Amino acid sequence: MSRLSLLVEGLSVTVIGVLIVAVILLVISFMIDVFRVMSQKKEQKPEQKLEVPVAPAIVETDDSELVAVITAAIAASLGTHTDRLVVRSIKKAVLRGV
Amino acid sequence: MDFFNLLKEAVFGLAASSGFALFFKGDNYLYIIMIGISLLLIYLAIVKNYEPLLLLPIAFGMLLANLPGSNLMLPPTASENGGLLWYLYQGDELGIFPPLIFLGVGAMTDFGPLIANPRSILLGGAAQMGIFAAFLGALLLGFTPQEASCIGIIGGADGPTTIFLSNKLAPHMLATVAVAAYSYMALVPIIQPPVMKLLTTKEERAIKMEQLRVVSKTEKIIFPIAVTILVVLLIPDCAPLIGMLMLGNLFKESMVTEKLARAASEYMMYIITIFLGVTVGATARADTFLNPKTLGVFLLGLVAFASATACGILLGKIMCKATHGKVNPLIGAAGVSAVPMAARVAQKVGASENPNNYLLMHAMGPNVAGVIGSAVVAGVFLSLYKI
Image 1 (cartoon, chains in turn cyan, blue):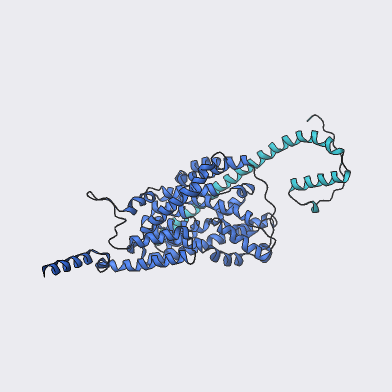
Image 2 (cartoon, chains in turn yellow, cyan; image 1 turned 30 degrees about the horizontal axis):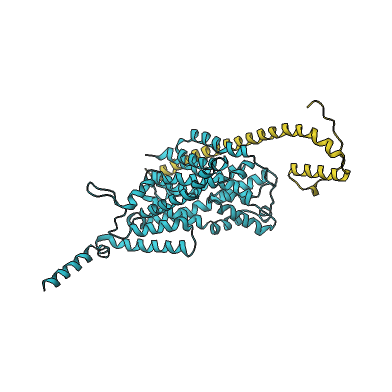
């Protein structure tokens, strides 16, 4: 086989190979996204159930402690630090028919 | 007087059958050069600490096979058993050892950072482009497509994958390719930083990345199972490598097979490493190793590693722009799947720019993705070129 035709074949192999690898890796990465979405949905359901018993217990303590606890919880769930959050107002929500 | 004659004959007879005498037969002086090379590799392994776990057995196997008369690699004949290393070599020839090492690798790998940041799998893929760059270069230099694939896969920075592919496509190059692969894997901390600094700006290198989300146990268990089903159905030829890698990972993540995970990643892996290393080295014969092609392999191997690093970084830059500066391009270099060395190099270069930057976990994503990527590429080459 001449050098040129070998190179051309090599280039087509490269293109095919790159495409196949890219497709497979993309599919794997989308599959991982599906995990993430599914695990987020699972987290939301048990969290809503937890809010009902927890809220009444905290109301009895000091207000500033309460603010600190809520801010820390929000910061943790957002993956940032409390320094980066400014709390403007906290209102107790009324949960209807969860 | 007869006694002295007998003695003289015995001594000469012994001398004639000794290995030393065999050096003078025909081309056998080349063995001396091979022995010298094996001694150099032993030195590099022990004194310079170049991937000693593999390079030392390889070097010693090379030494043993090139001491004439030892016959350790001779296949059995009708009348005699084969040599010790020949029997152990069947683990290579039959494609058993490399997948078993991958079993151990999987049992030591944490896919968490990859699952937390799925786009990093693309960085692992980008780095595999270095494989194709070396593949094309090898074709240009006159290697056959089979040989070129094995030379290219050096850029995958994965010992078992390289050995596995080379055994199936170009067994005569096995020792050359393996020695090149492990040498360059040891040189990753030297090869990568210049390429990384050349292709990135100071600001890009100083980018601090967001903390990774927490990955649940369930995800970590589903991942190996799903990847196996998906990838093996798509590219059946990479089944031995991907299948064993994911099985090992499942041993680790399932929490119910801790003893199996430990056996796979500790005792079994190191036993197989010994057998694999020694027998791979023992295939390094003068005729296959001492020719200009070997120089070509080493040159192309360097091209493979450098271009793999470059391609990973380039995609990293693209992702950086696309996410408005959330991705530090340096982690792209970790797509060169020398685990965890390439990730550590990314961490070091990043920290030298910004001491508060802790890129290691982020770099592990592309690092382990590269292992999957190079196994997939090997599967592609196999499906195209297997005889």
